[in-house]
Length: 458
Ligand SMILES: NC(=O)c1ccc[n+]([C@@H]2O[C@H](COP(=O)([O-])OP(=O)(O)OC[C@H]3O[C@@H](n4cnc5c(N)ncnc54)[C@H](O)[C@@H]3O)[C@@H](O)[C@H]2O)c1
Image (cartoon, helix red, strand yellow):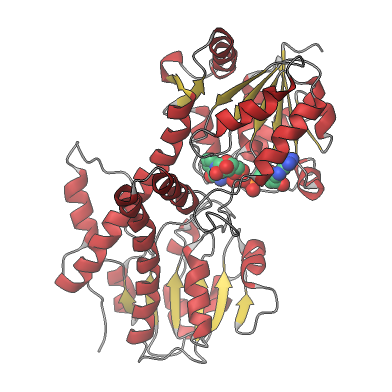
C-alpha cells in the first residue's frame, strides 16, 4: 500500500507509544513508525506484553501493528524516509552542572536533533512532542537549519496533554490539541500539515494554533496549574486535620463554584508522575534565568508543599504508632504514582517508603501493576523491603496498612480478613481517601485519612 504521509516518532515511551498508536488507528493512510535507542523496549512493543500498561492500549496497538504501525530501532532509515518527525524523548531534570536539580536535561533532545540533521536527505517537519523549555524550538531550528543548502526543517511545538491511566481516552477525545509554529509561510504550511493529521478525528475547533513559544510555555504552565491545585488542597488538608473540618467537604463546597470547578481537588499524600515536578522546576529555572526570582519562588512552593505533604504523612504514621516503626511490618498498598498505570516515576510511595526504611520499618509493597518498577526504584535486595503481589499476604502480621495508590482493587478487599491477620492495634493510613473509614473503624482499625479527623479506639 502507498501511504499519503510517513510519520516517524523518536522515543517510544509513555507518550510516543500511545500517541502514535492512536494516530495510526485514526489515519490508516498514514504510515507511522516508532524508533527508540532502547532495543528491549522496541522488542516489547512488538510482543504480546507491551512495555507500558494503559487501559485500551493493547487493542489499539494490536489492531494496527504491522499494517501502518511499526516499531524498530532503525532510526536513521526512519528519519530518511519520513515527512514528519515527532521527537518524544525523555527530558528529565538535570542532575549535574549548571541548573542541576531544576533545568531540563536536554542532552537526549540535542543528540536527536543532530541525528535528524545527519540522516535527512529531504525537507522535514520536526515536531517537539517532548515537554521542553521555552525557546527550545529556536535552538532546534538553529541546529537543523545550520546546513545552508541542505534540506529545510520546519520546527513545530505540539506538547502532549494526555494523562497516564487515561492516555487512550485523552488522545481519542482531547480537550484540545495545541500546535505552535513560526509565523512564516513555511511555518504556517507545516502547521496545516500537522493540523490535517489530527483533524482526522479531532474537531478543528479544538485544535489551537499559536506561535511556538506560547505552545512551549503553555505546556509548562498547564502542569504548574494542575499541580498547584493539588498542593493547594493538600495545604488545606493539613489545616483540616487540626480543626475537625473535612477536606472532602471543603473541596466539594468550593468546587461547586463554577469559577473554581471540581476537578483536581482531591487531597492525597501528594502528586507524582514524571512530569509535574520536573516541569515546575523547569519553569522555576526559566523564571530565575529571566530575572524573576519572586515568580520562581511562587511556583517552587508548589513542589515544596508536595514534599511537605509526603513527609507529613510519614511523620503522622510514626507519631501515631507510638513514635517508632522500627522492626514493624508496614504493608504499602500501591506503588504506582496513580491508579491504572505501572509508572512509578516520582511516586509519593518512593519518598514515603525510603523514609520508613530510614526508621527501620519492614516495608512490604503490593501493587497490581507496578511491582517491577518498585523493585527498580527501591532495589531488589534492599534490606527491609519485600514485594508481594497479594495484598492479603502483604498485610499478614503488619502493624499498619498505608494506602499509596487509589487502585480500585484496594477498595473491594475484605478488610475484616486483613484486620484478623494484622498485629494489634491495627492502623490504616489512607493516603488517597478511598476507603470507607467508618466501616474500617467498626472493624477495629485505627483509621487516619488525609484532611479529616482520625477515627481511633484509644
Ligand atoms: N508521561 C507522561 O504522562 C507525559 C505527558 C505529557 C508529556 N510528557 C513529556 O513527553 C516526553 C516523553 O515522556 P515519556 O513519559 O514518554 O518518557 P519515556 O522515558 O517513557 O520515553 C522516552 C523514550 O525516548 C527514548 N530515547 C531517548 N533518547 C533517544 C534517542 N536519541 N533516540 C531514540 N530514542 C530515544 C528512551 O529510550 C525512552 O524509551 C517528556 O518530555 C515528558 O515530559 C510526558
